[in-house]
Length: 103
Image (cartoon, rainbow, N blue to C red; front, side, top):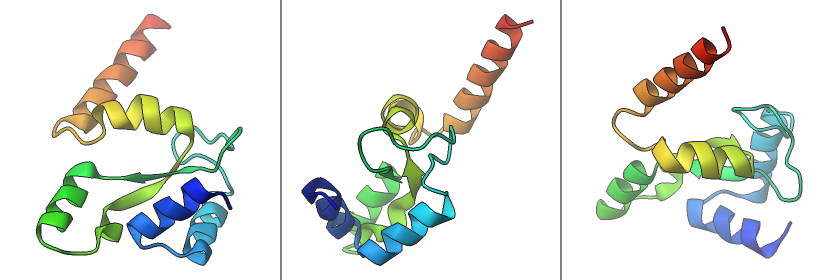
Protein backbone atom coordinates (compact mmCIF):
# COMPACT_ATOMS: atom_id res chain seq x y z
CA UNK A 1 0.00 0.00 0.00
CA UNK A 2 1.50 3.34 -1.06
CA UNK A 3 1.99 6.39 1.16
CA UNK A 4 -0.77 8.38 -0.54
CA UNK A 5 -3.38 5.72 0.15
CA UNK A 6 -2.17 5.27 3.72
CA UNK A 7 -2.54 9.02 4.27
CA UNK A 8 -6.10 8.95 2.89
CA UNK A 9 -7.02 6.01 5.10
CA UNK A 10 -5.73 7.94 8.10
CA UNK A 11 -7.62 11.07 7.01
CA UNK A 12 -10.94 9.18 6.88
CA UNK A 13 -10.25 7.02 9.92
CA UNK A 14 -10.21 3.79 7.92
CA UNK A 15 -7.95 0.83 8.62
CA UNK A 16 -6.22 -1.11 5.87
CA UNK A 17 -8.53 -4.01 6.67
CA UNK A 18 -11.64 -1.83 6.29
CA UNK A 19 -10.36 -0.54 2.96
CA UNK A 20 -9.64 -4.10 1.80
CA UNK A 21 -13.22 -5.08 2.74
CA UNK A 22 -14.53 -2.16 0.66
CA UNK A 23 -12.35 -3.27 -2.26
CA UNK A 24 -13.57 -6.87 -1.91
CA UNK A 25 -17.20 -5.71 -1.77
CA UNK A 26 -16.80 -4.05 -5.18
CA UNK A 27 -14.58 -6.85 -6.55
CA UNK A 28 -11.83 -4.20 -6.90
CA UNK A 29 -13.94 -2.29 -9.42
CA UNK A 30 -15.30 1.22 -9.56
CA UNK A 31 -18.82 1.47 -8.16
CA UNK A 32 -19.96 3.65 -11.09
CA UNK A 33 -18.32 2.30 -14.25
CA UNK A 34 -17.36 -1.17 -13.05
CA UNK A 35 -13.77 -0.88 -14.28
CA UNK A 36 -10.82 -2.04 -12.19
CA UNK A 37 -8.22 0.60 -11.33
CA UNK A 38 -5.53 1.04 -13.98
CA UNK A 39 -2.44 2.40 -12.28
CA UNK A 40 -3.53 3.37 -8.80
CA UNK A 41 -5.80 2.14 -6.04
CA UNK A 42 -9.49 2.95 -6.14
CA UNK A 43 -10.24 6.44 -4.81
CA UNK A 44 -12.03 6.90 -1.52
CA UNK A 45 -15.00 9.02 -2.52
CA UNK A 46 -16.55 11.21 0.15
CA UNK A 47 -19.20 13.88 0.50
CA UNK A 48 -17.36 17.20 0.81
CA UNK A 49 -20.35 18.99 2.32
CA UNK A 50 -20.82 16.28 4.93
CA UNK A 51 -17.08 16.32 5.71
CA UNK A 52 -17.19 20.08 6.21
CA UNK A 53 -20.18 19.77 8.57
CA UNK A 54 -18.55 16.93 10.55
CA UNK A 55 -15.33 18.95 10.92
CA UNK A 56 -17.34 21.96 12.09
CA UNK A 57 -18.99 19.76 14.73
CA UNK A 58 -15.63 18.26 15.72
CA UNK A 59 -16.72 14.79 14.65
CA UNK A 60 -14.96 11.96 12.81
CA UNK A 61 -15.08 12.62 9.06
CA UNK A 62 -15.14 8.91 8.26
CA UNK A 63 -18.93 9.14 8.07
CA UNK A 64 -18.51 11.24 4.91
CA UNK A 65 -17.07 8.26 2.96
CA UNK A 66 -19.46 7.07 0.23
CA UNK A 67 -17.46 4.33 -1.46
CA UNK A 68 -14.69 3.53 -3.93
CA UNK A 69 -14.39 4.95 -7.43
CA UNK A 70 -11.82 4.80 -10.20
CA UNK A 71 -9.78 7.94 -10.82
CA UNK A 72 -11.80 8.95 -13.89
CA UNK A 73 -15.24 8.66 -12.29
CA UNK A 74 -14.09 10.35 -9.11
CA UNK A 75 -12.28 13.24 -10.78
CA UNK A 76 -14.52 13.80 -13.83
CA UNK A 77 -17.98 12.89 -12.63
CA UNK A 78 -18.26 13.16 -8.90
CA UNK A 79 -15.81 15.94 -8.06
CA UNK A 80 -17.48 18.26 -10.57
CA UNK A 81 -21.11 17.77 -9.50
CA UNK A 82 -21.43 15.08 -6.83
CA UNK A 83 -21.81 17.44 -3.90
CA UNK A 84 -24.19 19.90 -5.51
CA UNK A 85 -27.73 20.06 -4.18
CA UNK A 86 -29.08 19.10 -7.60
CA UNK A 87 -26.48 16.41 -8.42
CA UNK A 88 -29.01 13.61 -8.96
CA UNK A 89 -31.07 15.75 -11.31
CA UNK A 90 -27.94 16.78 -13.23
CA UNK A 91 -26.84 13.17 -13.70
CA UNK A 92 -30.32 12.09 -14.80
CA UNK A 93 -30.49 14.98 -17.24
CA UNK A 94 -27.03 14.11 -18.61
CA UNK A 95 -28.06 10.46 -19.03
CA UNK A 96 -31.21 11.52 -20.92
CA UNK A 97 -29.12 13.83 -23.12
CA UNK A 98 -26.76 11.01 -24.06
CA UNK A 99 -29.62 8.53 -24.58
CA UNK A 100 -31.43 10.92 -26.94
CA UNK A 101 -28.28 11.57 -28.94
CA UNK A 102 -28.02 7.83 -29.67
CA UNK A 103 -31.53 7.44 -31.06
